[in-house]
Each structure stands twice: as structure tokens, then as C-alpha cells.
Amino acid sequence: MTKLKNIKVVISDLDGTLLNPQHRISDYTKSIFQELHNQGYLIVVATGRHHLDAMAIIDKMEIPVYLVSSNGARIHSPNKEELFSFNLDSDVVKAALNVEIDPEITVVLFKENIWQTNKWNEKLNSFQEELKYHPELVDYKTLEDFSSIKIFFSCPDHEKLVKLKDAILANSSEHLHHAFSLPTCLEFMDKSIDKAVSIEKVLEKEGFTLQEAVSFGDGYNDVQMLSASGKGLIMGNAPASLKEELSDLEVIETNAEDGVAKYIATRILDKELATS
Image 1 (cartoon, rainbow, N blue to C red):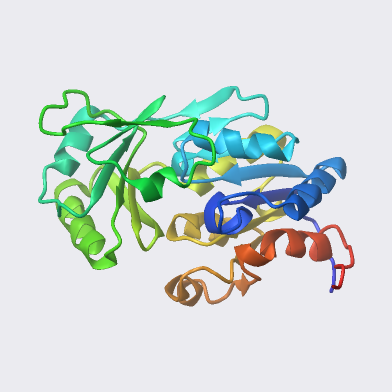
Image 2: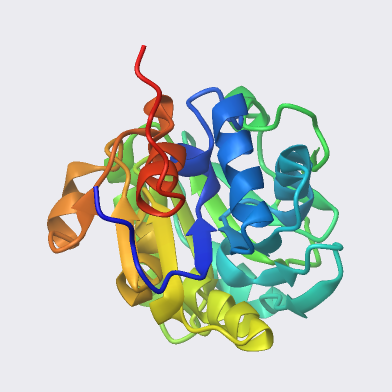
């Protein structure tokens, strides 16, 4: 395979992309990213996860990584210094939640140090190997301060989330935009926030452009990032509808197959893959 030219930056989503299906970074992926760092590439992780949650994961890579979290609402430097932060106003969030919400849907507000939720959700908790970002059960009917980093909804029934998305946008489209990070996960952010916007802030600080970046993602919250990068790559495990929407982009192996690390090894580091 021919080596990608003019790439100076590697950007990756976490869940469904850099992480395997057990929400962990494999030893092979870790070794490839350490080699990337040793060869002078800038590395950016861009995730919908909260920064406390994501930092616990990227610390295991043992290399300097810029972190764009909560779909762009926070940026942290490799030494964990907060470089950018944006919160939704309490009134905006309250208005967004002032719609009929199916009882099967889990509602979460991302706060700075905790996440407030209307019910305990074991599946959401399983995304954290170590619980660094703690949940707090709240009653939204009596909550006073709704200010948050982002609004998150989870439900096994995708159509219920689509219906909720339409209801919220009918109320709040001038303030919010949405993304499905997974078919079961709906997220709302301020209109000015997305991964690509915050990644550009990081690259500007470091003297690079998105045209010098390769990016990897698997969800609708990755669309702007994938489209704006010099080379955007879609995971094999991404929804078929995302692959169709970004049909000009290459699809690589799945997160279960170390797709990101294998692509980097062969197309950026110019290594031969070991054959078993």
C-alpha cells in the first residue's frame, strides 16, 4: 500500500473507533500510537465522552494527546490544562427538556464533575472501566440549575429518539443542534459546537490545518470532522446510513479488528502487518 503523504496529525474518535467493543484500547493499538508519537505526529482524540471519563482512557496510552471532549464543548492540552470550555445556559436546557419524553428514555445532563440522570442505566455505566465520572440521580421536575456541557439521551428504540429529536428541535432549533453518536444515543450541543470546530482550534495552536490530518470515526457526531480532514476514514462497524451519507470516504476494518491501528501502521508508519 502507498504511504499517505503530507499527514502530520492523527485524529480519532473513541467508542466504536479507537476502543474495541469492550471499550478498551488494545495493546496493539497502544503500541502503534506510541510509535506515532515517537515519529513526531500530533495526536488528537475527539469524543462525545466527558473529559474526566475520556482522560482515564487516554492516560493508558502513555503519550501526549490533545483531548476534544463532549463533542467539542471542552478542549484539554496533553498536560490536562483546559484550553476551551462552553456550557449550555440553564434556560436553554430547561426549554429543550420541556417536551414529552418517553419513560423508556434515559436523560443525562453532562456537568463539570458529575452527570445528572433521571434513572440508573447499567449500560451507560459499563462504558467506564473505572468510574471517574460519577452519576447523580435527580428529579428534573425539582431541579433548579439545568446548565450543562451537553444533553444526552439513551434508548434501545431508535425511533423513540427520532421522535424526541424532532420535538426538541421544534422548540429549540435556534440554540441547539443534534447528533446520533450511536443509533441508541442522541446528543444535543450548542449550535456553535462540534468536533471539527474544536479540532481546528487545536491545530491552529500547533500550526497545522485539517488538510494535514487523517481522522477516524464511526458516528454521526464525526461527520464534520471526517468531511473536513485531508483524509477521513469510516470504521467498518459504522452504521450503513453513515457510510452512504459519506460515500466518497474510505471504509476500513472494524474496531474489533484494530482497524485504526492497522491503517496507521500500513499507510502512515509504512509498516508490514504481521501475518498469523
